[in-house]
Image (cartoon, rainbow, N blue to C red; front, side, top):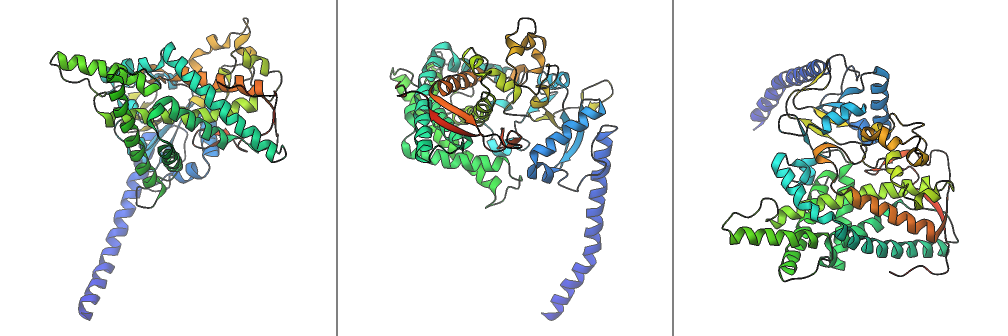
Amino acid sequence: MVDSLLYGLLDLRMAAPLLAAAVALYILVEQLSYHRKKGSLPGPPLVVPFIGSATHMIRDPTGFWEMQAARARKSGVGFTADFLAGKFTIFIRDSELSNRVFANVRPDAFFVIGHPFGKKLFGDHNLIYLFGDDHKDLRRRMATNFTPRALSTYAAIQQRGIVSHLRRWLDRSAANGGKAEPIRVPCRDMNLETSQTVFAGPYLTEEARERFKSDYNLFNVGLLAFPVDLPGLAFRRARQAVARLVRMLRDCARESKARMRAGGEPECLVDYWMQETVREIDEAKAAGLPPPAHISDDEEIGGFLFDFLFAAQDASTSSLCWAVSALDSGRARPRARRGGLPLVVRHRPPATLMPHIALQNFQLTESYTIPKGTLVLPSMYESSFQGFHDPDAFDPERFFSEARREDVVYKRNFLAFGAGPHQCVGQRYALNHLVIFMALFVSLVDFRRERTEGCDVPVYMPTIVPRDGCVVYLKQRCANLPSF
């Protein structure tokens, strides 16, 4: 036995130099590949083996993306190169180049992934992963979810949910002596409850809502975690949470189908969708045709519903916090009542990037072709500050002034909802939610922002929010809150 142990140690000692040589060769090939793809683009001259700049991105996302934007701006080419967790990466600051990427989502150009490791995290049933006719057909079928009639149903739900939560905020503020408190987490809880009711209505029990909240928190943590898919780690817990959430929404779709087939009236988004879905399925069956793609399988519908909820939840939390911070200025409040709130989305786009994968080599400019397999990151945030006069200011007059009309002149630079075939299908719902919240908030609540140094520096949670969580003083403005 001793001899065997000695031989084993000897084998390991002999293999160690070979292993070290193999690792060194891999690192050399990785560096050479990075430089070949990078060419003359701005970017780090050397990258950390295997992980690249991923550690910096996760530890300090605000600083990391500011650095990328500064490199792209300084170089004059409008984009920059880097290396993230094994992926050669292109960050695009220039609006026109970003539009070029958004306009070319197709099998021979770009594939939207929504997150650098999105397919692992979100699963296979996701609207953004579809192309061509499949994608067009599904978006056409989803249009029934955002008709004026459907939006009016949601608006009533949104009003009830918002007033209910404002009442809780004001009660809590009164109980703690009127001290200033951050509203990011209360906004997130309000949005989650409102989204659950708008999207799944009567099909989520109170117990299911609590499980939903817990699993959604796990998902949020996983979005910002290092993407190591091992038991016990945040990324794995997030994947498992998404699977449970999709199954929960699958069951909601199944119950809605049964209720709509029985002649029930739509009460929420899944009802409006399933009402048309049941009709299509039944017509196809009567005609001896196969069932319609993507809407016949309840699990697949559950995945799409999770997409809606994810898009509505975190983006809305971001936009509400920035709106409160921006409207702390009395000058801006009258414009809020006149429809100026979408300006907040221009000033602070909640989702700052939309990751794509290059499926083939793609000529981005005359002098640079994006290599196949590259992770491409058009920045909606950086685009929103290009062209506009004094872009860092929240200035409603840029859209209200007939002489300026910056919303028309710089329309292509407003990419907060994306562009091209994958532009956000629910943007009208998102803007309605923002307008309804702020109309109620400024009418029912006296508020004042607690200003401290750096309080409005954007941080990633995972969408951008004020660094201090948007700390405000709250006081009830009217004698009684309305009852809807």
